[in-house]
Length: 124
Image 1 (spheres, rainbow, N blue to C red):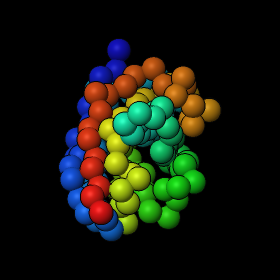
Image 2 (image 1 turned 180 degrees about the horizontal axis):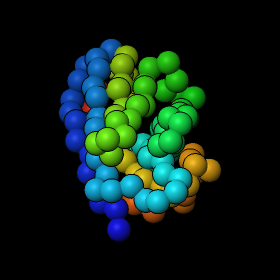
Image 3 (image 1 turned 90 degrees about the vertical axis):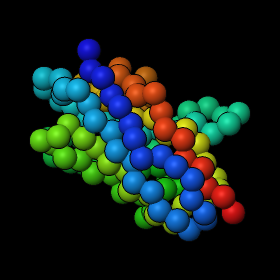
Image 4 (image 1 turned 180 degrees about the vertical axis):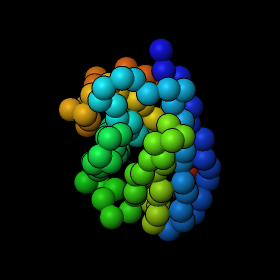
């Protein structure tokens, strides 16, 4: 079992910035990756960004490219999501997840371990 805990959500105005953090209780043997998903009210959960643990290869959903940056601290089992130029459409609950693979990281089903989520609200 891997416990995943997010922190860092909050409320900002359009154009503001937030950094989310997520710590996993441990990493699994072999391949390991962590990702961020978000779910807006009335919408399905969608992929935001992911990063592989060994090489730090990252992936982004198109609407956040150039605004969001995912990074990891291997020693701390922690992944960060730096969000700049936030927009009202970024408002959602942001979930962190961990996966025992480096493949198909844009898919929700790839991840076996999920956090409880943290709210991000962007006002216009």
